Amino acid sequence: MAKNYVVENAGLNCQYGEESWLIVPGDRHITIGGRRMANETDYKKTCLGCGSFGGCHSPHISQEAAQSFHDALLEYDESANLHQLAAAGISFPCQYQPGPQWMETKEDVYIAGYRALMEDSWTFCIYGLGIITLYNSGQVENVSETLQERLRQLEKVVDAYMQENGISKKHKNDLINSIALWNGYGAIPWDTKVSQELWDFGIYMEKNHPSLSNFFERGIYLFDEQTGTNIDISYMAGLNVAMNKSPNNCWSLLEPEILKDEAAYNGYLEASHQEPSENALEAMKKFLDSYESPDYNGSSRYSDYLEMSEVSRDIYEQMYKQGSSLDGSYYEPGVPLEYYGDPDEILARKQRLADWDKWSQEEKDLLILQRGLSSYIGDEGADEFIRRVCENAGREKTSWK
Image 1: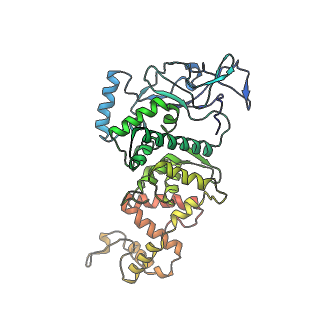
Image 2: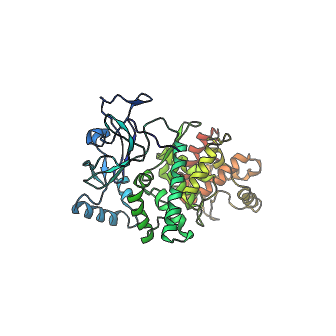
Image 3: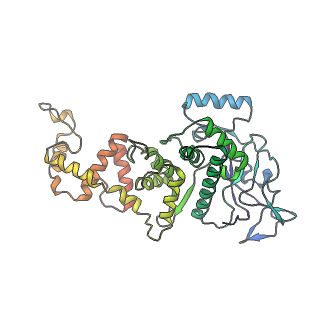
């Protein structure tokens, strides 16, 4: 896959900051698709959207900054990382100071007298020493194809690195996950391993493949045209890897906070109807293959989540036959119903459950799902989440109740 030339409004990413975009001087007359082409001199502060990368969480700013991050990590969570601190609002204002001109530019193509900027070019900030790269070229691109190409590059680099350093194949998944899994979410349900081997590989990637390394230092999103919503591919891949570890399942990995994040919410649902993967690269590839298939149906992520397995259905049918409590409620014999709430509501609920054999399969599945989720996020959280999924699936009923 040929590398693209970079044009104005290309996406920028700082290793220790947030995303920004590239501004190309207005006197540039060479364009692609009506957008001005960039060159190696477009690295100054005036070429940076808003002039900065927002918040900075570089530990290299100063001794004071390093101590502040150290103290915050201990207070926030000993297993947390700098990306999570940034997500929690713990950072310093970006003080971008341009380093060298863009590296790895097109040597034989000149734009306004300087070498053309390419999508894998990079530079760094001399204030916080953050590597700065481009996560897109600014041209109209197929995000799926771009991600597929980056995944191919990553696997090739990992294989070569393992061979050169005599690393066993059993460590391949950990090496891939150390790069492909972004750990900037407030809650991370997948394992974030730390070892000297992974540390050395991270340093190797930053030195030898800075553009590729930085590409994954963020949440990667794909816009699903069928549903008109974004899918957080990074979050989906992390959950997919987490589900490969027993006793994890899609219910146990649900975080109520994702209702506030549409892309993470869709990423969770996509992970829920996929087979678990051993590494993030495998998880992303499987999804992209499905996404690019003519049979892909974006709405199925909602409807599939609401349909229970035959095993779960059989369990509840047996519970009904045995007279077990289907909704988990228990009322102590001899204790007035008033003790548990409104007697009329309780009796109506008990009668409703007694008519289980008259329920539709859709209603039965909603109860099974509600009982499963409530074990992890409580009754109210389960009800709220199911209601949202039902609405997205176009269901009239949003609760068994």
